[in-house]
Image (cartoon, rainbow, N blue to C red):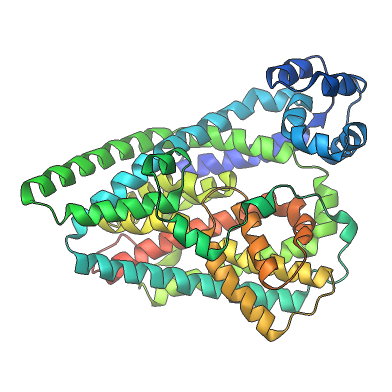
Length: 470
């Protein structure tokens, strides 16, 4: 009997996970096991005593539980202890039976990201051969990133002006947003932080821009040392890269189980999916429609006419990383799978993929740039603020720069939106309007980011004279 292809296994796991999550929605309440979690996390005894007064009361949504806890403990005390209290109050045994698979799968992917990026970039640069070749490849890569991000932002801007999803939006849907202002960084700070003070600290905090900068610098100067050292280091990093790819292939085998565990928890934890879609449907529809245009029309046209490749054959080859990106909402975590698919299925050389894809996973954020533009315009429309042509130009430019600074982790785009809002003097609390649907839209925009990265690798490989399978 023919074995079912991996992308079909992932799609089946995705559908089953959605059904499972809908059947077993999450509830919240203080119960017997809650106290163990609270004590283990050293929560103040006075807070535990206050929470004990609500023991046995079950809340159907996180919002209703949060509102009750704020009234009981006070906004500031709850804000300080919210993560621990939510963890302690979590009630969903059927989901907890399977969600561990998603946790382990994500941890395994994150475990291999840094050694994979480091070894792939250094081996890729040493295989490129010279500073001239590296400069040419770098120029093509960044030229592609800027072009596709600009097209994505323009698509979002046109649609949000035509549909105007924010006009008449209910401002009472606004949620409290915590910690975004503290995380906000200017573009100048992002550029400075690319150069790490301590590379091992960058490894520890998964600071991808710093790691990529160090890897490019290290790879470049490997080409400048004596031949015997150059060959020794080049062979060493090629060997490390081969080992990391073997580990990646092993982890990939468990993708359907991992996706099932991740999506089950994501779906079950959503509060009132039906109400959310009805209240924010126009905004969600605008973002998804704009992403679909970029995903299914703009990028395939660029691939077809600029790269001279068959875009939908390439898309079929990329099914596994695209489904994984959609489920995990992390282009960084999907990177090992993207590299494998681009090389094994589409025939891009390791020399090209090891340079373009790690950069793309951190810098090339088409979906995020589009989303940030639509979100900023939606917030302006909701607050009744008229955006002039100049303000919209500032949004386009800031979204382009902010998408480069958005780390390859879930919800980083939310932090970067605050940069855009500040640039055009929109209220930062407007982010609270889009918070409820951000996790859902994050799945769509991450898949778009990964698709753009893979198209870029194929187009650049073709421009370098490589013969591809697409």
